[in-house]
Image (cartoon, rainbow, N blue to C red):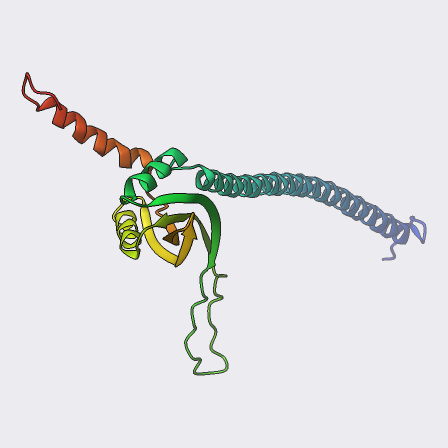
Length: 240
């Protein structure tokens, strides 16, 4: 029995070709949609990343400003402390009237003052760097040493020039000054014979270093307190 095909000869081939074209078009659309979606997602991710980066950069910039301000404040603090120490060192803790009274009270009988000079000297001392230990190997690493720190203090000198009859009186004057709580050291610069109005006397010069940590107020206050206590214990009817 013979089969008669009424369809055109290229029908099936064209149909398969149409299906393939439709499938390819659908796949192309899907791929394009995926690419577009991926691009959009990537742009959003990039935008979020850039926003995070900007926030981090802003945080770093703010932190850098804070650190710079801290450094400036620290430098100002160091400068203020230095000025405060310098101001405190320049303030006279012992008034000159008190020094004159101390020197006058220490003078023995038969001695007199010619000149009295007060000098202030600021001494800066640098700490010596510590000696490091010996290295046992070429690859041995040592911690970097800090630079030696400098410390300064103010020393007050008192130069006294006077006249005395004998060297014994000069020695007594030196001993009286050395016993005073305000003096740190008393040195005799010279003592030589000199004639004043046809009278032979001894001219001497003494250099006294005052204590830097002693305050004249603290030195005078105990004496005033003791004197007041002594007056308080005087019986009625008696006079000091």
